[in-house]
Length: 215
Image (cartoon, rainbow, N blue to C red; front, top):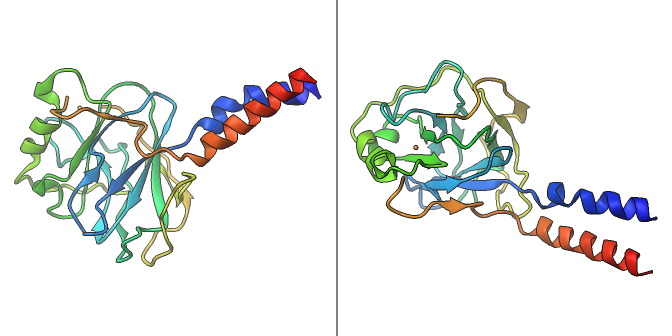
């Protein structure tokens, strides 16, 4: 019994872990990422949720905001939906290290209208969100050539509000570049919109573990 309780307790970090959610667009079809700046530890997952109308997520660079970082950098492919609750299919990436990740919407004209974001922004404001957004305005978007660098599939977050919709890619795993090569005038969100259900589950496991020790 004690062994089982100990195993459950040691599994708490895995139970508590839930994706950091970034909304791509919103129910009003805005050209925004929300939050646009996040800080996410290495090893954790970022899950992009897509809202009207059509958007995608591609990894870029600070110097060239609307151009793919490389031939192997991540790209979600286009996600289309008219459902204000969002597309049921998501795109997720795993953060490999603490280096900045600059990304943008690769749908034609969206990046050029300032639809960009940063994961793990650097300390220097000269490479932060305000300057990055300014650099993107008016730029022509260069699309990626294939879906890669992440996983396309149903939402993993416990508190996901995504609903079924049409024009969603089939769930699949894609291979490719790892997220790496981003300060912002506003504070970076940490663990944005994490699922809370898993946290309650973790607390429950911990309580059971303590109860077992007291028997």
